[in-house]
Image (tube, rainbow, N blue to C red; front, top):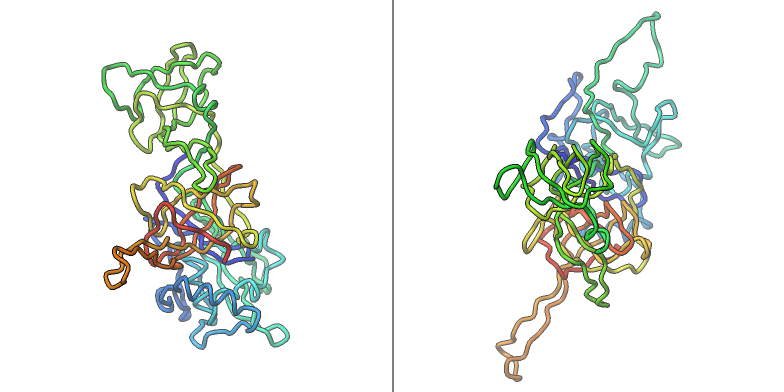
Length: 384
């Protein structure tokens, strides 16, 4: 289930597209031939969070404007992001949804794949960008009938797909976790276990032979800082295990591992990993949340790292919604004030954007898609 390839999504409110960053993967750059431009030739300096916010506020007062340096044709490469592609063609990348022209002959024209050729067209005097070349687009004119075989990498993913971000998060209620089977010991006296190890599992009488489970670890109760309400137990993904022989003390083999398994780790029902594709948009107007837990981090997180906020499905939160992130103002002593030891709270600062990628009833997991500074527990997220 868990992949070492990290993927993420950038933020374009109101648009179906998201961004795939294939970290650690070798770029598969098609032959550009006839002088086609590559992303490295035209990539701009990343937009700051404040500029992003200003762009959102000004959208209604302006029209899409094509860059003078925009290429006439561009071949999408593995590793491209939609934000970079948008910035390559447009002065203001947020206008991408307004200039995108879908191809009706393509099965899902909202997806952009490596190898697609993008070009500028004008419809009624307005600029439009569409896919007009690449393996998925059939030529409109042929001199004679022919059979053409195009080999494609089976691992090629659409630019607009968000793969599971390195893990499948689980937030469980206390009863479910307490009643779940747990690792009791291994065949020897070791205290940590990994893929290929046989372990003994307690409380697995109702399991079936060769049934798969996720191994998870209790990572603490999530509590709403505003109301004190318990929101569920966050878990750390450890690996996967297969029950070989059910029973009160069952035998199981560890198949995969993200980290070392230890005694007491729980086994929860296996869920097949699925690609996630969803609309990118804004949360309900006026929504504000707090970062209540960091995933796999001690004190702070940055770009492409994850956290949990105290807002979930019951608050109208959905996958793909984008928040502006704010650092909480620090308290400092004023050395000049007439009041001895006066403490002043500094104003909040908008420092980035985050996107929801997994929701639960009371909480949601967010991915930091853009950050000027690190984020911590207690920092705020708000509707842009």
